[in-house]
Amino acid sequence: MDTIEALIRSATLHLDDLGYAEGTKIRYKGCWNRFKKYANLKNVQDFSLEFGYKFLADHYRVDFDLTLTHFQRFTVRCIKVLNEFSEDKPYIQCYQRKGLQVPDCFFDLLMNYIENLQISGLASRTIQGKRITLTQFLCFLETNGINEISKVQPQIVLRYIELLVDYATSTAATILFTLRDFFNFISVNNYNGYHLTRLFPVIRSNKFERLPSYYTVEEIRDVLASVDRSTTIGRRDYLVLVLAIQFGLRAGDIRKLKLDDIKWHIDKIEFIQEKTKNPLQLPLSDNVKYALIDYLKNSRPLSDDPHIFLRQRAPYRCFVKGNVFWSIINKYLNLAKIETKDRKQGLHAMRHSLASNLLIGNTPLPIITGILGHENSNTTKMYLCIDIEQLRTVGLEVPL
Image 1: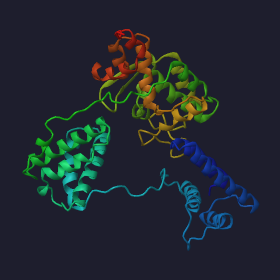
Image 2: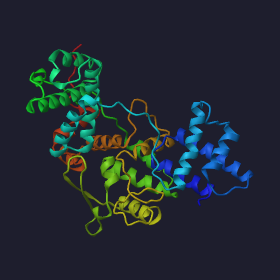
Image 3: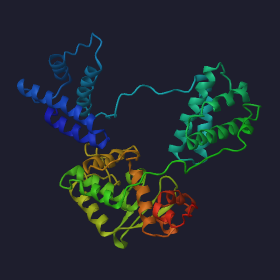
Image 4: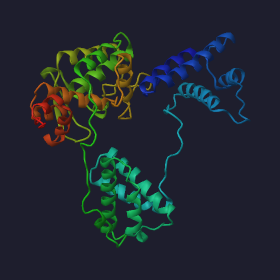
């Protein structure tokens, strides 16, 4: 049986693994610390759910026969999390409400479309985005009394498109591209005879509508300097930051990076990118090498799992979510006291910053394309819009 203190220690570490916000972690730790003090007063060391519920009743007046307040429900969750740890059950990040579900009348059709996308080799993340978009559209149809795809006429589709007027141009275009592909699928398979794809002869898309977030070299140095590399989590976070900052690696590629991807004998990192499925080769510079050795030697749990980054609690295995490191940048931006207003704070912001800083340093575009692993330089050109100094060199004088 696990002790209360050991469970709390493991659960606290796991909050970092799951990327919880600092405020949420403080709330969990506050409840657990009070539970630990309560157990000490009662001379109880080993955890049991029954004792946890007794603590809730005595300290927070939790009565399961009555309607609980929002805060009381949170304290119950705190104890249930410890119980999940004690039984070595999967620990989900939060008990969320069930999201929007596809209407039953359209379920089989949507699944057929999803299966078609999977056969085509589309990335699972892209498929999930299309599924969410189409679920919203199909719910709209049901709300308007349509429960058969064969009865969908152009007028109802145009009404739905009108609802996108307040969306950003790029977001609306993504939705329209998905709808056009879906309508093409139902037309080819004779689900509908109205040829709805004709509603989308041209889809306007502006990828440059929003400037990518950008952090200066000085700000990035401050971020790295704010990491406490004497701790287990700190050594791991530092390596994640270095990979994102120096190489612009996507979160999914960092999560899936394996020990065999490190080619020590030739000082290279080689792997297949999750998004593009293209190979990428990067130099294993000294600072990355030392950060990697420090993490592997002093922080990475002992495990036969081939992935470099593992959870810090048993079972020691790789992270299952691509965005598991999303909060790391935010955490250290705050520690470094860097102003983040109107700027994104995830790992991808470091990818944009790398490209921008390379441009400022007059690095040729094809080289930046290679570093970022883009398929062509057209994708990389989106970073040109924030290279203010380069834009100034081609500015035209305005006559007075």
